[in-house]
Length: 312
Image 1 (tube, rainbow, N blue to C red):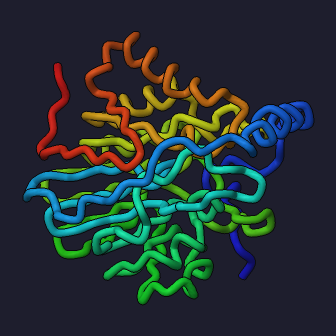
Image 2 (image 1 turned 45 degrees about the horizontal axis):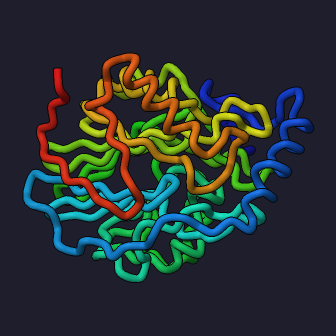
């Protein structure tokens, strides 16, 4: 049977065609964003991870950079969208990975949100090992089967997987999943990771859409890891949230706290490097949400206890 196009099956499919004005936007992107950063020194530092697990009922969240996170619980460790690449083609990494990939603790499970090169990075995945294997969206299993994982699990939207007391839920997003151009059958989305009383939502890549309300209705979320960069896409397509939209999505999720991601690591949009965080903090202040936004430095973990409650 022919493969079903996501655009015909899901209203949150962003499509692959650029919008009007894409030539001018790409000239600016390559001149001001790509070539300008080639000779700049990478900022940040690479740290040794904390190997000891956190206490029972506590989650340790460490941002590695871009959309990569190490989530540590008392009995489990989960790695999401691991990417230690120094370059993606001509796009240079601007900040060092926060953790040394060679010193990671034992990983129970690897989650990949979609097949794009900056999220499914094969060279990083070849180095990483995990006890329970790797989880990818439906249609991307073939991409990771030869990377050394003993088990590959594909998930459709709203599917659940249970590993001991660890629950993984695959959530919708407004994006696209093709690794190239022809393979638009590949799915995409985010994940909710539940361990004990704690629930962490990794959004994956997404533009703003009405699905965040549904996610929040279905599942309580303590911490939402939300993308805030690459919103000024050279293609002009609606594929990433801006910071104000990310805050709105965070509110609609009903999450207690938000940690931003998907900014300042790789220059993937035309917005200046400093803009996403500045706009995020300004919007949080306008709405009185400053105490619920947690800005992480790469490689510096934060420990949070369940059940979390944000300040009134």
